[in-house]
Image (cartoon, rainbow, N blue to C red; front, side):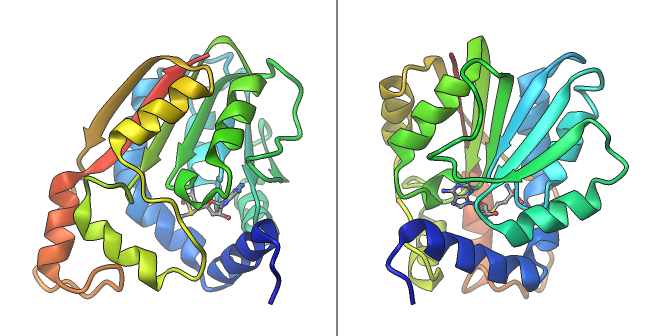
Amino acid sequence: MTNDPQEQLRIEFNQWARAGKGESMEKGHRPVGTQAIERMRVPASARVLDVGCGSGWASRLLAGSAIKGRVTGIDISDEMIRIARESSMSFPHVDFETASAERLPFSDNEFTHAFSMESLYYYRDIPRALAEIHRVLKPGGVFVAVVDLYWENEATHQWIDTLNVPVELLSTDDYRRLFIDAGFTNIRDERLIDPTPIPENYTGSSFKSREDYEEYRRAGSLMISGER
Ligand SMILES: C[S@@+](CC[C@H](N)C(=O)[O-])C[C@H]1O[C@@H](n2cnc3c(N)ncnc32)[C@H](O)[C@@H]1O
């Protein structure tokens, strides 16, 4: 067992990748992630960063808009990056790198857009990650992040004890403040609702009961966006 927080995350999410969770997260996150990505209005020439990209499904979705640009996904888990690369062979303008959000291996002003789905609250140093995302965006660049685990969505608090890594439980105001402190402007927050039907017999492992799952879906996912 390592004491290095970044190594803990790498090991944990490598296990998720081996267990096929990269693919199941795509299924779970896509309905809301698609709404957030639509709001980004990514133009054809965009240079997009997907932070904590997992299996890379959002990078490939973003690549459908940035057809004359480029999309780069980064993740701390090398196993997730391996899956993302294997799944993106037919996307010549998409690439992936194993990297920590707190230390992005890119020059200043490299990207026009940045996206992050269900990843921020795992970071051991969120202010530093936000400062890094701000640094690699061009002036006027846009960052859109989505989280399901946040203070106002009480049903998700039960995840804290079941996860093998520590997470940050933050409110909408906490996130807004962090974005401001990192230098972002025009901060907006919005709840995004997954429109897919809830199965009559809930058999998922993320919630104790169907009622909890319904409560989570009613509260929605928190999207926060800001401009560089
Ligand atoms: C819940 S998964 C979401 C993955 C993907 N965005 C999706 O929607 O399917 C969180 C991802 O964040 C990554 N992650 C966690 N901490 C990270 C960090 N400090 N830097 C980069 N990636 C990180 C994990 O490896 C994992 O792939």
